[in-house]
Amino acid sequence: MENLINRKVVIVTGGSRGIGAEIVKQLALKDYNVILNYNKSEKQAKEIKESLIKEGKIIEIFKADVSKKDEVKSLIKFAIDKFKKIDVLINNAGISQTKLFIDITDNDWEEMLQKNLTSVFYCTREVLSNMIKNKSGCIINISSIWGMVGASCEVHYSVAKAGIDAMTKSLAKELGPSNIRVNSIAPGMIDTDMNKEYSKEEISEIEKQEIPLQRIGKTIDIAKCVEWLIEDEYTTGQIISPNGGWVI
Ligand code: NAP
Image (cartoon, rainbow, N blue to C red):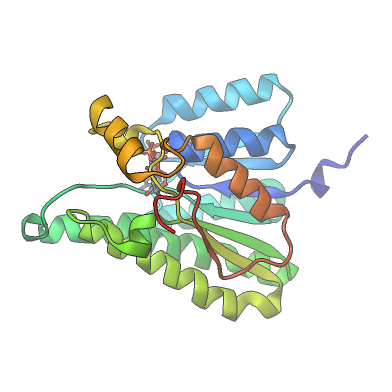
């Protein structure tokens, strides 16, 4: 019988919906041991767990607001108590907001940075003692094309995502000698709840006018990139951008 302990252990933050939920499903189906973190969407998290368990896969779910230090500590402790190690951390949880820069309140700014950037700092810092001890690890941060090129009316979002990319590059240098790879995936526009404010017509316009491959992305496009980055052994410090050619 296969030794389940030897399987890779993966934490996916914000795994209840959208891109994170797809990553959870694809990795569980490939026989990774997965910890799905969620915050508000308990029902969705439980449904994903049930359907994967029916397929004989190994998955745990854990509620934590990753912008809160103590909740992140509980999440990582839960994962280590359960599986004894963490091989892969996928910092995916995030929020977005569209506003003119002059309308961004102090609260909007703080919430954006806390939920999209400080959360990545908390989760990464917390898993590192285990990864450094094991001299092995893979961290994948989900940033955005807007962190690379800036988005009008999403300045705070763009700043948070650019901060993630800077963290990726700096940490890759610091952690390479410990055999820990750190990379960003910077998606273009992906079909999830995050873009539900756009009408069908607006999306079709973007597809025709802006994206050389003539379509917005699907969550599976990002999950495939995650799978490749986990299995790869020589890529670190990179910002990889599946975006249909929108940003080249
Ligand atoms: P989504 O459909 O809105 O899902 C967001 C996920 O993040 C949910 O599972 C949500 O969990 C979780 N989340 C939010 N705040 C959290 C918190 N404080 N603690 C724990 N979990 C939290 O968004 P998505 O499109 O899948 O986006 C996923 C990531 O990709 C984000 O970082 C986003 O910025 C990035 N991204 C998305 C696009 C796009 O076009 N969709 C493009 C580039 C980058 P609950 O519902 O359980 O709270």
